[in-house]
Image (cartoon, rainbow, N blue to C red):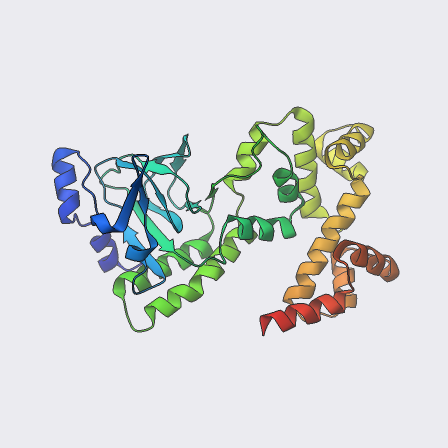
Length: 332
């Protein structure tokens, strides 16, 4: 991000100057931008997306922002500093470089930001990007995520928000800073560029980020649940040549204990879980590359092609080339 834009973001606007002097919140949008239900502001599509599908703004500092919800998805990016928020009744801290995705109807409030805190709001009404889509993508190639989503904790399987731990992923930072730069510089084709960046951003988030959902659920689990979770993570990383014996040795568990825990917690044997991860990895390559199927089979760790085809058809309901053709036809 260039220095000129950084200075622009740190510069106090008129509302920030007043909020800094009084500490009292000043509404940053006109009355027509929101409705009030049960005393809570609900920000409306009609105002933010009159002329464009994406709305980007800097969050005003120095005063608490009251509880509100949205008719659209909101992405908070902590460009600098940190932000304390109350989301659906839970206190969260968004650290520098992290992203918060709030689903439609999610309620949150934001504590006053300090001088050095820069929070960027990215609002968009692309209905194809939502929590269901994100978790579906994550689940598609992750035994861990599949396990977490199907493990009810306190009777609640799904959150209305996700915090992405993206601070140490340079490419995600680059994409976000490019979105911010394009929006505030507002050059020719800027809106189009941002529209193209968004699906790339979310695909990268799904591919590379451990999410807060995983951390939170893990903290509530028993030792045996965490043993299963640790084993699933190891399988995801080492599926090509992992064995039960290697897993038990690496994680410090008795081999028979680990075998029993995996069957009890997931309903599948260790071998079945390894094969499932191999199949997920193979399917991703089949859909996203033109690599020959024989090479994919070898790359994911299967020794017997007939065995692979049998497992693949049982898992996905068709043969690899049929899946590839279907994916290519959908993309056109």
